[in-house]
Image 1 (cartoon, rainbow, N blue to C red):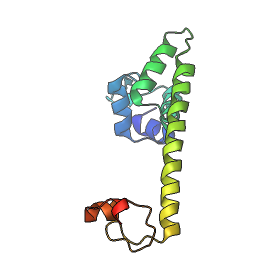
Image 2: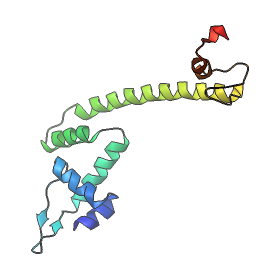
Image 3: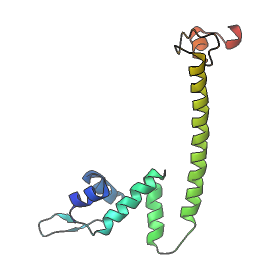
Image 4: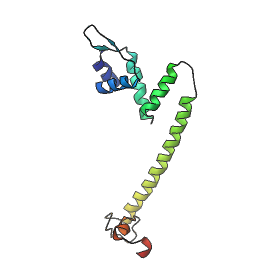
Amino acid sequence: MRSGQVAEQAGVNPQTLRYYERRGLIAEPARSPGGHRTYPPETVTLLTVIKAAQRLGFTLEEVAELIDTGRRGHSTPDLRERAQEKIAEVDARIADLTTIRRALSAVVSAGCDSLTHCTCPDCPLPFADLAAGRTREER
């Protein structure tokens, strides 16, 4: 398969294909007599796996390490351990997002109208006080 076909089927652009090649994520392809890169069909599958792993939160470096471990042909607990670490990261992000959601809900409920000159009586945001150089207790 030529690079354009592989890229299209895998949902990436040709530059991504070459970048993954340079990073060692996919093997350098053979060349046709005309000099065109020709990839085996399993390259599409590998690219799909790489993109899916990225959507799960793995970095390209982590994906490269996991692929390398798999290429060595023996199983290791790497994927399971890394997935557990990703779960912990996701849980931390969910907690952060929950805190942000609560704060934004408080802003909406209080009727805040400005970050620096809010006129609502019980502004939950400290920005107005900070901009005025006073603490909440001084309000």
